[in-house]
Structure formats: structure tokens, C-alpha cells
Length: 319
Image (cartoon, rainbow, N blue to C red; front, side, top):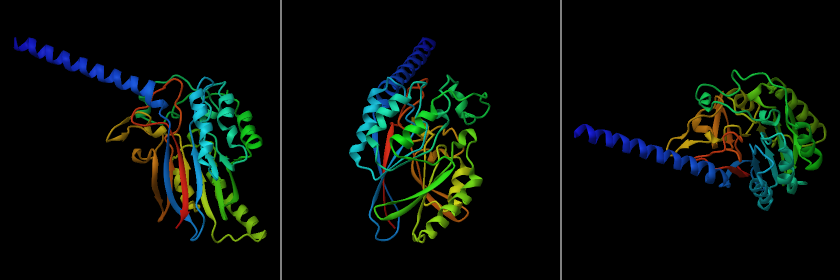
């Protein structure tokens, strides 16, 4: 009889675990991945007396053509009235995803914006063994592929259609609400397209040009932009004077454990910094770091748990 009770107890525990797992998966795949939310932060990086600047940070849309709810939600973010939009890549999630991106972002035409690319803007998603994420970033050991997404059309849309600036291994400046911002970025570090060696040269050339045009370069606010927040990138950005760094890629872990957080980050950033606002320190310097948990997922892993899809409204204020 004792053995029978033990068997029944074990069977009940297994059944309860299976039911809980099925419920969690149903919640994550059917509900939470559509619970789009706006995170709000305030970051003190502007010169004293400067007007606040509202920066909308978008990342990892992973757009597929049938995702109309996502398209409509992103389009509706124009109601936030951002002064600047920064898109940190992985916009495409399907070979026909570009149409959805155009629908989602067309309302932002004329709003100043910056963008960098992620690997999923070059390559369509593949079915994967997701347990590999616990051992190494997904780029490690990945087979060589030829880009199969229409990244040229997407980048043309961003530049010509929206008026946004391409920050892939590039730097630029603009004045927003009276403050001169210097933004610099790299192409996706996850697939080795970053040219960190070019960053000091780009910044020197840009600031020399500003000085020649009689711009005051003493109060410039530098913002670094990348898709994947690898340590080498964050360290380089801090070394080159970034006061704020914006990145995506991690999906915030995508499937998290309440009270623990992300289990994976798909790069070498500490898991505790896989999403949200934190500080990144290197060589006695530091910068504020915002890593977006992103808006989408791979079409082959359409689930989020304890990690809602998000955009971030980051208000820059005076120090």
C-alpha cells in the first residue's frame, strides 16, 4: 500500500508539473507575447539647463507579414511624440516582412531617427535547438549563409522614406531641443560586422567638422548605438565617451524565471543586464546602458514568459 501511495504521489506530481508547463507555454505563446508595453526611463545626461529630450527606443521587431497587431501597436507609438527614434535592428523576421515594417514605421516619417542593423535584417530565421543558447551565443558554430532578406529596401525606406540616419559603422550629429547630440554606431557585432577600430576616427572627424563650423563642442552628448551588446562593444563605446548606450538583441532572455530573470542573453553581457536600464563601467568611466527586451520573437519561437514585448521611452534630462 505504501508503494501504491508513493506511485500515486509521483504520478500526481508529474501530472501537476505537466499541466503547469502547458499552462505557462499557452500563456507565453498565446497571451504574453502580444502584451506590448512601453517602458519609461529618465536619464540625466544633458548639460545643465537643457530641455528634456524624448527618445523612443525600438528593437527586435522580427516582423512577419501577418503580424498586424504588432504593426498597429508600433504605428500607434507616434502618439508618444518622440523627439528622436533609435532603432537597434532585427526589424525583419520573414522574407516578406518588409511590408509590415513599412506599415508600422511610416507614421514616423519626418521624426528624426537613427538605425543600425541586426543579423536578422540580413538572414531569415531558421529552426534551431534552443538549448544551444545555454552554451554559447547562437552565432558560434552557425553555418555560413548568404543574406536572403531585402535589407537594401529596408535601409532605403529608413533613409529616404523616413529621413532616418544610418549608423552602421558611422557617426552623425544633430541638434534636438537646443542640445547637440553626437550619435555613433556599429553594424551587428553578433555576426562580426562591427568596425570598432573606426569609431575614434569617425568621432574625431565629426567633431573637427563641427568645430570648423563654429559649433560649441564642449557640451556634446555622445550616444552609442549597436544591435548586440557584446562587452567589447560596450567597452569601446565607453572609452570613446558615450554617456548613453542603446542596444537590443537579447530579447531580455525572452523566457525568464520570475524573481530570477533572464536565463540566457545570447551574447557575453551579464544576464542581469540583459534588459532595462543599468550602468556599464570600463576603465574608470561609465555610461548608462539601455538594453531593449524587444518587440518580437523568431517565428520559430513565438513565446515570451515573464518578459513582455516592449518599446522604451527614454527621457533625457539635465545632469
